[in-house]
Image (tube, rainbow over the protein chains, first blue to last red):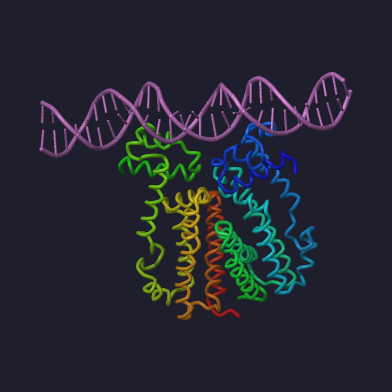
Length: 206
Length: 206
DNA sequence: CTTGACGGCTAATTGCAATTAGCCTATAAT
DNA sequence: ATTATAGGCTAATTGCAATTAGCCGTCAAG
């Protein structure tokens, strides 16, 4: 990895741990193995480093959109696959969603950074909401809608069902972000949640 | 309100909006209506202001523990009340929990500040987890456990049921914190969530 | 009525961290 | 071979924001 890229990588790590304001350009430089002034051969300012991270992340999200699908392609294809999904596969789906968010290194650091920095900038708050609320709910909601149509799931309110699927995943994720030592506990609870979800919505409720 | 207290109040507002590092002591002073150096007649340093906020919040949490109970006293008493709870009352309970967190001014600003500052300090992360994960889940879990015992609710896993109750409330709360203009939308979804929750757990599931 | 502490002000001072200046080496293109 | 560029370094410089110094008016207690 070239220096220019290493800077982004180390900066993201530090920003996600301590927040933008508490990271000095010297800290970033040190991790990269150079001196602070040398950073300026690559980026105009500390702020420019931050912006480059955001930009790179935007690109990644575009590239990796659909990384959570089974097919990795488009939701219509996925829906076909989901028609024949079993309970175990449903649980796997939720676990994979969780584990992807939890362990993907870039995603994880970016999420933590956004959590810290979201109130600095309206735009960042919007990115946060899109990534961790609107997009997951609308994408999962669409899949679940198709699954309801094909009889795999049953509900009279897909939106709420999707919320019931996703909200616990999100909550448990925030726990693990704050205290990685609780990961095992969270995974157990996640499993129980998914099994319960399947019980509830896997066939007709009132 | 005396100056000393006004300082804490304005500081909390600013910290919750912009984060500790982005607030200058001059900003706080200006809001209070004094000059920056005068602040030092009341607090030793900017850091001391921050710490005083944390301390005051700890006191409030102790004082207001149980503010969310129906009785305002102890859970055992509450449990008696919950035995005869109706669907509408259950929905009210959830809404009140949500609205309390959402609108109580001090709570709201403190929560936003914690969200921003939690990664600076292990201790703050612990406070966040306790306030917004462990305590709500364990308190609600206890109530629900009693309600299950008395037949108002039915499940074979109280912990997961509690998670299903609380996680959507938490998620919708984070949405409102980031974008207050979505409050109405969130309240609607909250209502739908609570009705669905009641349908699911209000009587036996498999 | 005077004194001392309380709380405010203006004008330094301090200190740190971002950035700039200016130099040096290696390497790759002409 | 020469030279321009990329990328590194050390040594300033800058600028800002926290804090300190030192002064002043008010007011309550003696």
